[in-house]
Image (cartoon, rainbow, N blue to C red; front, side, top):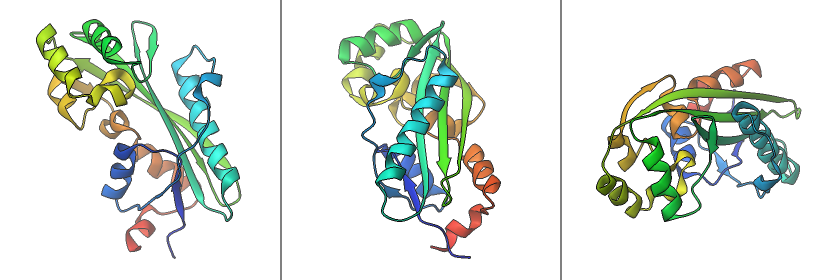
Length: 198
């Protein structure tokens, strides 16, 4: 069985690298969906809604059938939902709230198959942030890494040193849950190993 064409509706280098690390070579086609249209106050519903809209937007632009995956991540901390910070000051302020605390990283996944059927799921991972100093926060933000990440940190970068523990799916914190993706592909009758033969 030949591997189906797999489209990632995201510009995230971390998501692309995760897929490539498990043998899936995605076609990258970022969605231009306006995230400000989402008004959900529940983290689970928000990430599922945005993942679906991103995947749906890209699927409609394609000239030929493909598997299309859309994802969206947010961090929930003390009942507040955080996406990417608005700038340096915002990232510093967030880290001052996050340090020593526990956050919940939610990633929504929406996968369309060739018949334009869709599965929408989310994964949640518990993140324990280290008790770091103001100087360390400022040094981390100065790397600019947290400015591009939901929750203002990257587990697979400098930010990995500032996390004490995660409980749950590791790859979910990076941008997509590989175990969840395997199950979603299986639900569409795709064996993940077919992607290794590309």
